[in-house]
Length: 114
Image 1 (cartoon, rainbow, N blue to C red):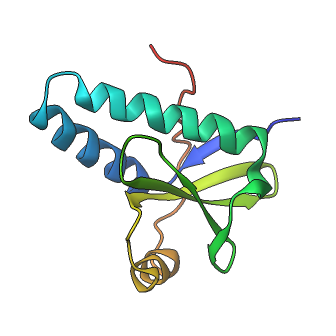
Image 2: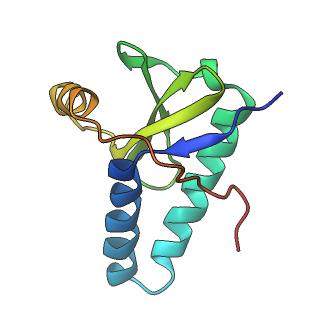
């Protein structure tokens, strides 16, 4: 049984910021970035435990073609994305985010391109 993916508001903002930045760099590049994020999340859903832990229970799945990773936790009943950030993002910044997380909304991320 595959778990649903839930995205914290902070991670949703990460996605939007990165997609907008890439789109400003080249037409269609923002959409390509989001497509690669969807592919990474599909891999996470298929095998959530395959990716390494980078801090406590936070794991990181790398995004192909872009220097980003999806940082997530496997929780009871769902996969929760806590950040979508540059691969070189420091662990201390993830610790701060983990401590200061806003309440989880029902934000989900469609795994199929529209």
